[in-house]
Length: 361
Image: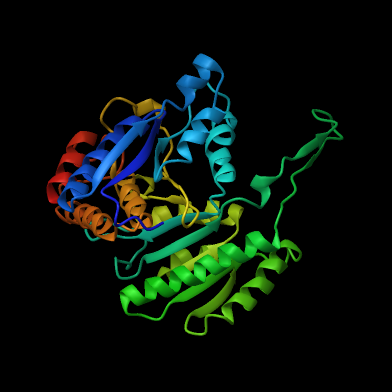
């Protein structure tokens, strides 16, 4: 989606549950500072979607609200999860529904270690960890309900099928090659796409991924390629993260690997993400959960939410705004004023971290 010519962008804001409202507030603070710098107007529309609304009304995502969200330029999301709501109700009723209804087939997760952040891997620094994971976001085991027979007996059988389509597989792989080519152009390097699968065991679904990967790769001769089984990829995340540039993988494997990637960059407190469909309204959210135990205490790290705002601006074609936000985050991290991303150990409150970064825009 390219909207550089627009004077004002309309962003639906869903703070959500727990620490969501706190980190979103800081993200909007930094976003406002960066947008003002480049003369971009922001119109933010708040939506009461989350656990409290569900407990109050029994609604997760009303059809009327979904229709409104589809008219926005982007959706900025905080966190979902409420201790009084059973697991899965909000996740499936809100997040997964948004991904499916809006056809957000790309889950985009940068894995980047910034200067001043301690890496858990011995001998690895920012020059070794800078890649992107593209996770297919609408298929696999998340797209099909499972079934159970003879539940709670010794004969219980649980079936959890997975769905893979030719069209869904091809579009995520093609997006990965296009993304890698553009990323390489900006960095002045040769792009590389790594397919992560388990085609030696999941020969049908992941065999489809292999075949389509080879077909699409032939159309991008200037982009390097490799294929790795997911167990090998997990090992390489730890041993040789510098080998990766752009990774494309399935929904389930991407869900797992991206949290490992977040650990490489310092933790979930600095991990942004986007649920994207090029040219359409997309959802941007920090990776972390709602952390209800620390909600309202000013202990949550807002950096993931702030970097998520940068991703959102990049998606909207406002690269200058996105770069200003990311550079401000990098400056704040390099300053040493943020001691940790762990709750209660940052050395600054949630608001103070937002103030620091906003002041560096």
